[in-house]
Image (tube, rainbow, N blue to C red):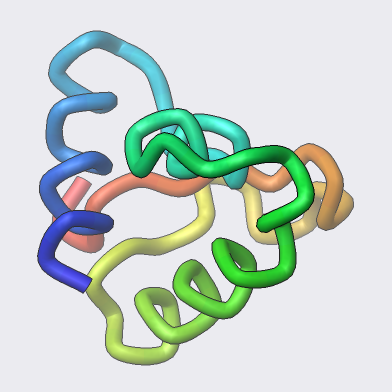
Length: 69
């Protein structure tokens, strides 16, 4: 969870957002681990660590930012 939050902060500082792909890249995971990262993102959103940039975007294009942004 902490790594997800800090990744969101770093991405925001770089004027980018968190996605499933950026988290997989950060953790060094293959594209076959998409479901695992999706669960992590879902938990982080539920705990209000991160939030969607556009809550109405399709799941495929969903991007996230730190909760305070």
